[in-house]
Image (cartoon, rainbow, N blue to C red; front, side, top):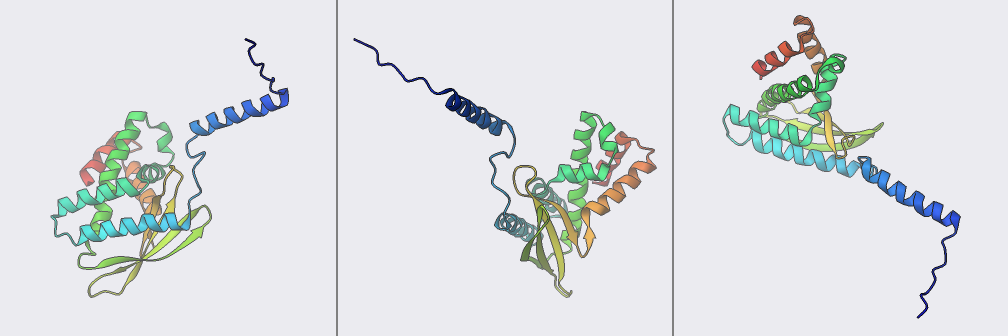
Length: 209
């Protein structure tokens, strides 16, 4: 019985076929290569969830320490804390060892969660509402309003991007106070006081937390 012969694939078609296979492989290896672009709805959905969980924590009646743990969980889940930490450390990040970087980011998580958790604890009895979302360059700004008892409402703005492969907020602006700028100034000052010693900075961030 004669085996059916297969018509050879033309050389030009083989090149296109192989190029397609290579392209698919490369896309699988590059984070976010096949990822859809961040949309306004993605950014708003993220902050809707963040605001919902913050409101739940501030009105939970939990102890101060329990609330700080909850704020850390929220920051770890929805914020790009590593990029905030790296930005705050500035050029010193380049000379830090992998072990120092890991320890510093962990200490920074506790420090930032307690610091901004303390700010959000002042909202007890109030609530935060998402009001608007707008695109700014390559990211989105989600504008919320904090309503506290006995005080005038004020803005809390969340800046959202998807550079990590999923929507995360990378900056927070409370009543005009910019988290990234503030922490960069404060961490740089702390590092300078310690004559650039990153290990001492890590120890003191842990104490501050």
